[in-house]
Amino acid sequence: MINTKYKVAKYIRLSDEDRDKKESESVENQRDIIDNFIEKNIDLEEFDEYVDDGYTGGNFERPRFKQMLKDIEDGKVNCIITKDLSRFGRDHIDTGYYLERYFPRMNIRYIAIGDGIDTKDAKGLQFLSFKLSFNDYYIQDISNKIKSVKNKKMKAGEYQAGIAPYGYKKDTEIKNHLIIDEKVAYIVKEIFEMYANKGMSTIKIADYLNEKNVTPPRCLYENGKYKKSKQ
Image 1 (cartoon, rainbow, N blue to C red):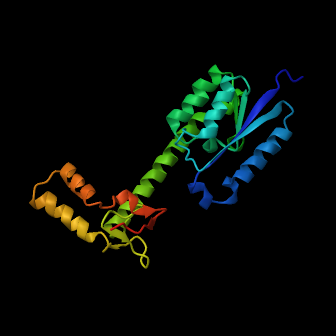
Image 2 (tube, helix red, strand yellow):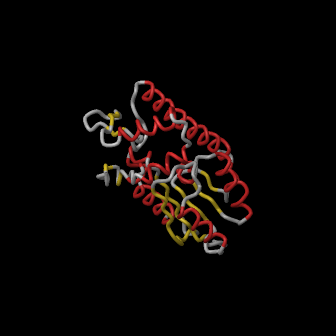
Image 3 (spheres, one colour):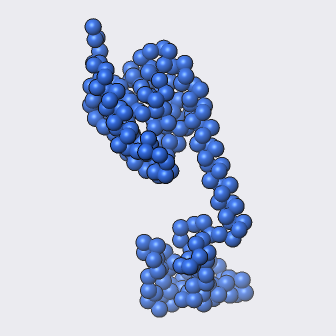
């Protein structure tokens, strides 16, 4: 006999990084797996679906995740289902807080289908600590690898930021290569002269440039493209 009918929150997360992976990480695939699971368990009833597309597992400042927590607080949800634990989160401390403290306090059942985790069953908790540690290691490992790749490219002289620094522009022929922006190069030289040789403060330099109606760097680019200066 079914004593409790669980009102399910289907939680789906896809980071930008996951877009380059296999189909199993897609929003559609996560949805299908969770829907099939709900259909096979008569004590589960979908309340709503919460999708955070473009958010990493270490970032819990996700709009739909926050809405899900609000619905929990309002008593609308008492069960959360994800494809696997990594879809919920990869940060050991924050993920552990929700699964081991917040959810039990709020009487929330959590199910991670692919990992065999179901907090309704004590056996489902046995693998939880290991998975939390593994996911925490994964996010740190990815971060270290990204930093390593960026450092390697920087040492090779490749520029990594999205917008070129003032006085330069991105080379349209060579990726991650900067070339001098002749339209504003003279201004950079003038700034250097005022600061290094004339001893002017940054505030005085800014005032001088404003008086000359020099376009600020932030106004030179729009959607990554060079805007024509008023000079």
